Amino acid sequence: MSLHLVPRGLHYVEAVAEHGSIQAASRAIGIAASAIDRQIKLLEDRLGVQLFDRMTTGMTLSPVGEMFVVLARRWRADENRLWSDVKQMQGISLGHIRLVTMDSLVNGVLPRFLHHVAEVYPRVRIDVEIATPDDAMAVLDRGDADVALAFNLRPHRDLHVVWSAELPLHCVVAPGHPLAELSQVSLARVRDQATVVQSPSLAIRRMLDARHGWMFSENRPPVVTNSLQLLKQLVVSGSHAALTSELDTAQELLDGRLVAIPVTGQNVVPQSIALAISSRRALPRIATRVADLLATDVAAMLAEVRARNQLT
Image (tube, one colour):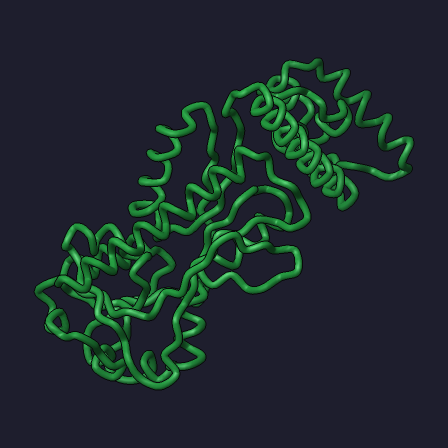
């Protein structure tokens, strides 16, 4: 798929940085080690600085070398965009899209979306990276992703939000749980149950700590985890309750394995879900179409979950 438009020097620096040595890079990209070494030394001579710190255990990037790798990645992203746009001008829906998203979506909306893409755009390649909401912004900003689907993205001048929705706070429990029959629930009532909560690395926990920290300092201590999959397993088992959003637990709610109860009370604020791109880089046209497809699929799943909740 690559057009090989990335300059040779950038390509070699990137390869050595990725594989840790000239010999390893040579084996990976099929270029003689002497040619790679010669090109890197030529760049270093012209710049008057080292691109790598050379040690007996391998080669690591210097600060200037890190700048070269960032440049190489941007050049490659431009190459992929050009390649995709040319193919679309020829009537061929091809492309390479990098998506960064959340752990909680991997058994819900994400599989549904990927199946949809495979049907509509079977020749589009999608790379999916899982990150925290905080890290998702950094991944998007440095050009390692084209599209981010994340909770509670903070406003940023280089961030363009394509689609977003509010996610009111819910208590999720198994159908047989003591809270399951309630139409709404207070945080004080949830606090009296065995609970599993997100670790402070996740934005929802920081919001709960800031507004409702008393929940975690009184009564029984909660289970704390940075894995939304573990959180959901504990709740599905019936042993614990959790505070989260409908989208975090969408598939489990649709399957009837969980029930979502709206949380009421003062200072209870909604989360948000947003699909965003970098405003500093233009996306290939196929990436824009796929991003629109993702927004449609997320909105549709959210509507399904809310419709089911109204029936139960």
